[in-house]
Length: 269
Image 1 (cartoon, rainbow, N blue to C red):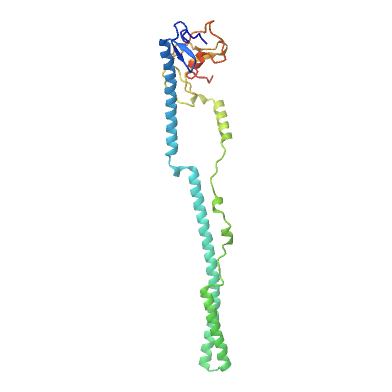
Image 2 (image 1 turned 90 degrees about the horizontal axis):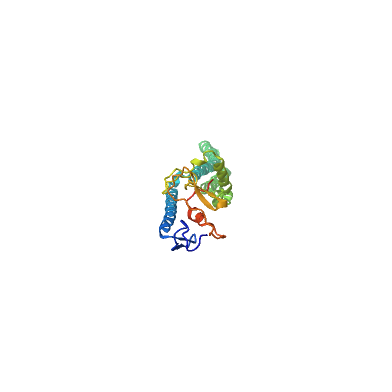
């Protein structure tokens, strides 16, 4: 790090302003440039935030009716309702067949009784015990008809239906997408079209924009020299930092150049 009385940028003028972020001193002129760099980074963060807000608005204001999951639920509902309708129709037919079967038996017996009564009346060939027998048949018909109308011998068996747990037949659950995200990330890195992931946008420094991270690609960092160098064909308007002087003291903290330019420069290389 430069001496406390020396500007961290030009390393010539006396540093009169101290930055608590990079822990460097700056002259009045270079401190203005230092703040402009930070301001540029803040503006870029605001732009990224606005893009995120647009994505959130689009996701929250979208028509849920067009969601594939909602459509799948709607299809399930239609299929299930149709199955219930078919089952109910089948049970109605069952009930009608059973009731009609009993009615048919009763109707046939009643016809036999009517024919016998008509024949005996016409021929007058009947005696007391015939009348008693016929009276018993009429009484039995009254009992049978009462039971038929009340349908006391027919009931709807809903035992299996009561066992259905409707809230567990179908429900929505979250599916882990961690593996899917990792696979997608790997494909992006391996894809030759990876540089087309982000749209090109103009930087405030007028430098060239990285298609992956959106930052300036006109700089490169040399680790053993602990400083950034600008490319020969660069269009970035930022001034390259001066080389460190022998007065720079070793430190466990990053070099001031890394702190000043780290947020602005692309590190995808």
